[in-house]
Image (cartoon, rainbow, N blue to C red):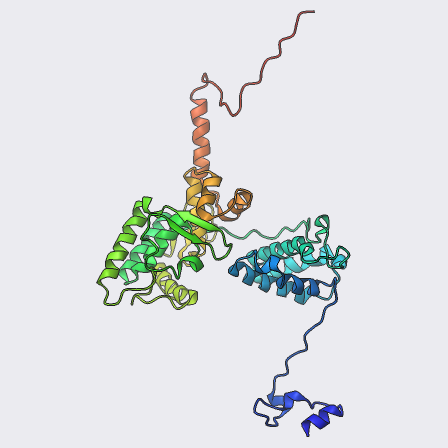
Length: 386
């Protein structure tokens, strides 16, 4: 009966009126799946669909990066999917990004902008026909030079006192494995999605070798030369040997079980951070934060996150005078991308300014010494007498 009425074109009658067991149900009880939008070649929606199924996306990007791209490109397609890309107005995109920054935060708007700009720079590799309407020439990226002045996302760095206090609290509350993770990240800056499921034998060798899940970039780190980390690893191995059932992962919960997910770890981390906040509402730091009234050089404990441990690792290495290329050997970034990464991860601290002033003071204290070879004295011109 339903099928016949549907064939006749009767209103509000169709497959949605039949459940999975073949029973007739009211249309109000069934959620009708919206029709899939079919985009035409050259429209932004079709280009995004083509890109997300092409090997240049599936093979060249890591799992985490793919997930981020899908999220941001879905938002962009929802706003501009029906447009042909040459008709995409820079002003419309700019206004949309500024609006999203005011609602959802500057960090998300920056990531969205970078993702869509990268998409337009790569889509030309997805088509074999040079006349395909979806090809965007290299010099015609519509998201280049938007003169976008979004508020910069804030760089947050754990002060050394905060690291020590959190690790001490984790040990006190029976979560030494979380303390191990904090120490490891402060020195090596490894992302949580990489180390969360490391096997128990991960630190049995002097070199820590793994491939980053977000970027698929291999990294080799000589962790054993760092005394604080080596001490934590040795203590963790001793604890593990005394447990009735040996943990299968190096980092685990207080019962020795692997973390069920990143969310499970984050929930326990947040509990410890909440308790730490009761003891220390804020920590003094050596760079401008501006989140605590009348105390710009303080960072609220509530702002300390695992994600910012990567900022911490990069900034502390930079403060120590380590070159950008060597910092990239720890984080896994290439020499070509290190300048951008340093701008994204590094806070401008008083230690960096102090190092610069110390060089000038040392120079002016010795006015008669030879000039720095980097800035040699200009050669005098010798002219022949007329």
